[in-house]
Image (tube, rainbow, N blue to C red; front, top):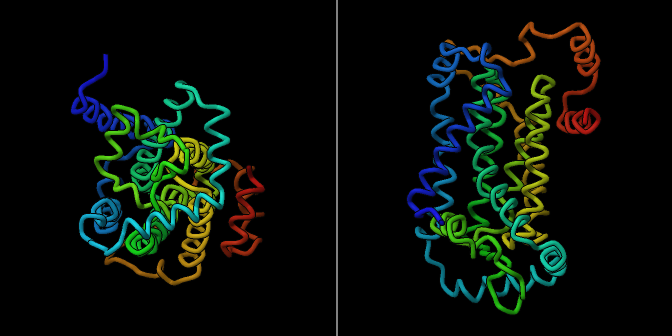
Amino acid sequence: MALPYEMFTAGYAATILTGTVAGLIFFVGLKNIKRGIILLNVRRNWILLMILTALPLLLLLESRLTIMPDNDAQTLRNVSWMLEHGGDLIRYLQNRIESSIITDFFIFIYVWVFTFLIFFTPIYLLVKNDTVLFKKYSFAVILNYLILLPFYLFLPVSVTSYAPETMLKPLLYIDTNWGMLVTSMDPLDNDFPSGHISILLTTLLIMASSYHHRKYTHFVMWGLIAITFAILYLGIHWIMDVIGGIALAVVAVLIVMNTKLLDIRFPKLRLRSAEEMPSESSDELEDRRAENLDSSSPADQIRRFFRRI
């Protein structure tokens, strides 16, 4: 028996909160969760936390705040172009592997895992007391949203099942509860670039720049891979949306890593990196010293990440 939509939504929110607590215990460790450190970091970084929370809501509201003439005609032209450049791959995935079990699994990955990652990551960094990486992450994600917004306003691209001639299946949107949850918030024309890809890849590259978050970095990496497949298979994004999201993430990380944003200081606040914490083994210290011989440029950080995995 299907749950009522209201009960389903409440359960969804509860599982995100439960997952956050479980994630902190798994990735940080119960004995390393210090209430005083958490409260101090939240109090000193509440502005960035508020911005990180508000920006996704702004993107959800943009379709209601802006009225563009001939929007449907422009969207259809954009969709036709996207169909010509990669539509066959999506059709191939759906025709070859579609099944109810696979569809339900990737719907969960798309709707639950992505939401968990974008809310959990800043909390994780503050609980870990890594305020340096938290600041890098915050500025990079904010930059993502600032670049995404004009694209979504002036270059509407709808989901792959927007027009019947695409012959692609809206596997996510025909689901009773998950589809209703998404369509109640998503205008379905915020496709290019893919914010799911750009924000998760940005998170991955930022986390990969620190040796001390290896376990969580691998989790984000597998989440990104799964979500990339999900958005194509479920009929949400086009191939070009994914490529655009990758480009946006790289640009955002390069800009943040090559500016003096981290020189901003709050009164009486000493930014601390997890790399300063004396909890390393001798082997880890030796590995990190070897890494520090390399340049600290973003390109070197990205290269070191792929060498580690």
